[in-house]
Amino acid sequence: MYRYTCKNNQDELLFELKREVFHPTDTSSILIEACGKAITSPKKILDLGCGCGLVGIALAKMGLCKGPVYASDLSGEAIELARKNAERMSVEYVARRGSMFEPWDGEKFDVIVDDVAGISDDIAGISPWYPEGVSCGAGRDGVKWIVQIIEQSGRHLNEGGMFIFPILSLSNADKIIQSLRGAYSSYEIIAKKDWFLPDAMAARQDILMPLINDGSIICHKKYGKWIWYTHIYKANV
Ligand SMILES: C[S@@+](CC[C@H](N)C(=O)[O-])C[C@H]1O[C@@H](n2cnc3c(N)ncnc32)[C@H](O)[C@@H]1O
Image 1 (tube, protein in one colour):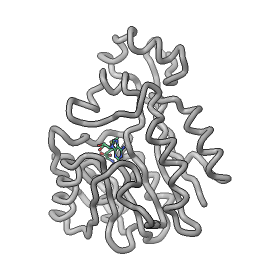
Image 2 (cartoon, protein in one colour; image 1 turned 45 degrees about the vertical axis):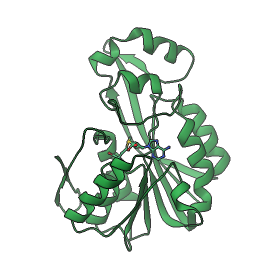
Image 3 (tube, protein in one colour; image 1 turned 180 degrees about the vertical axis):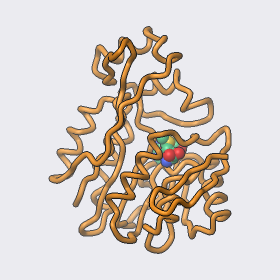
């Protein structure tokens, strides 16, 4: 089980987890907190890359969803689990399986919160976050999904809508920002956090150094440790 405490009302939420479904990380919590500040009244929200359902369900429990939570993921197991978690917490939930916006053809939202896998596949392979059975598939530089999602997000947003997503520097952040600049005239960073790379991953110089050297990921050294970052972006139509 995974416990999440809503920052605004201290509600304690308990999520069932499964080996084959992504386990929430500190980036999930930062994303929820940033959404909690950016969304100031209840909105029609899409949780893209929902995993066990944490982000959308937490936003609903914080009183930020108008109508059901809409959620999707590439993984059928994730969809099944997210539905189960929503039902146990009495959250109205519409969950669909599919890649990126495939399940939402012709549909629009006030807020899209995207958390689809966005790190280098090589990093995912040496990380504890993507065990066998949990799909990353974002390519060597981690941008395969996010660049397409950025390009397609505008046509799924209502007038005045918001697109909120994390950029993890374990991907080619510059490439992602370039596509964001092409798709949105207005965007900003609404939360930032630096992390130490876990020792077991830092020890894999054979994987890390080629990725750093060709710009596929951005890491720098501090106090003799590798540091990477999460930035949460909000773009407005
Ligand atoms: C970083 S996890 C986020 C899960 C959840 N938001 C959380 O915080 O625990 C990324 C999710 O993206 C899903 N995913 C990977 N590729 C996808 C794609 N092409 N389309 C939709 N979801 C995808 C994975 O199955 C995984 O559940």
